[in-house]
Length: 460
Ligand SMILES: Cc1cc2nc3c(=O)[nH]c(=O)nc-3n(C[C@H](O)[C@H](O)[C@H](O)COP(=O)(O)OP(=O)(O)OC[C@H]3O[C@@H](n4cnc5c(N)ncnc54)[C@H](O)[C@@H]3O)c2cc1C
Image (cartoon, rainbow, N blue to C red; front, side, top):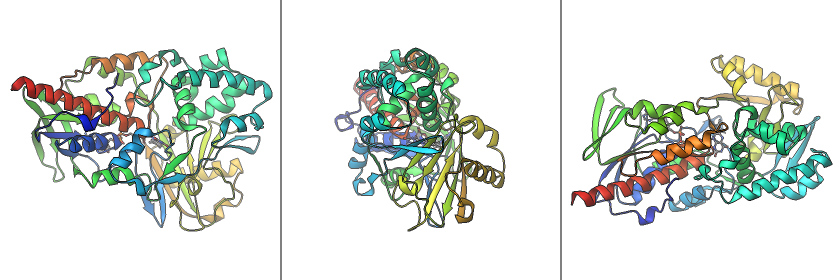
């Protein structure tokens, strides 16, 4: 089980030096907590900017979130970190209306979910009754399912299709389970564990949302401003020695560097961890080798006029459109995303289509997105209002917990050596999300602080 972070009560660090690999939200939260606990921390980041999959680009006055987009109020760890980093004034409540498309109609939901589920035309009365079963299951699991503790819910680790056959019906599968899988994980439910659906349902449906007018990058930027971050620094290996760790990396000038430290947090995406950590515990290596990530391509259109649709997000089930889609009305989703009176609309494709289009030129990808939007027919005349386009390619996107992977994750977590000077952080410890990455960064900071303090005591 992941350690509960209590950074304020971390052991005395004696000014020891720590290196953190990766300046995504996982690495930055680990670095922030360790620095606050008194360590001397440097973050090595291969890219030109921090944030990784939590980033925002500005084009012609539009703010495009190139990775993560939604921050539900259930992200308690993130709320706490925002407060501790003095960034509270950067955030405000944001759009919380989402819609599901059926037969050309958008059925909208918001914070008052139970009430809307009774009155909605999205589902038949029979399905609504069956949905009570899913709600009861989710309620039962709610206290044990979270951003740190996926291994606590082994009974949820069955396939979505198996659960739908056993507990639900085809309509609930088609209009709830499938669009939730496709829109939150960009993957079909046939490939996912029900754990994903329960977590999405309990963490992100029927809740409020928050965001920043500065874009999703407000948090990585805000943390990085308080930390020592070296950009264009690509780490090749992290190895433990008797009294510390040695990190090999290429710096911003292209020079090969060797740096020693008391400890290291490795906070790179799951598929890259084994490549730079030769001493990775075998169970974590095998969990990561089996874990797949989705791919997501999304295309943002800056619009000279806002569409009248009030939803922040529209789930388009594959019953309604081949392969299924996600549509985000960014100007409703969060403040500051489009210039005054203008609109920003983003189309997200699921993983199979994203893979197929990944290497196509931007112009072809944009043309395909526009064709799909016109075929959908929700925004007449859209073509004539476009004044900006941006294609975002995300590979890896989010980890996909397959049925059976909770047992593997449990073994991987237990295999972590609590005395090691090297410890991992990343979204692969839970429901792939910014908050899971952040929570795992904080847990890694705590593990490392405890290990270093124990090593210190032994030396003395
Ligand atoms: C399209 C998309 C939509 C999403 N939607 C949401 C959402 O709405 N809400 C939500 O909460 N989450 C969402 N997510 C998931 C969320 O963005 C990620 O789970 C989270 O940001 C991962 O953070 P991380 O720090 O673990 O990894 P990353 O953000 O990937 O950070 C890892 C960092 O390590 C660096 N790095 C890699 N290798 C090296 C190396 N060898 N040396 C040095 N540096 C290295 C990378 O450049 C990167 O900056 C979405 C993700 C995508 C892609």
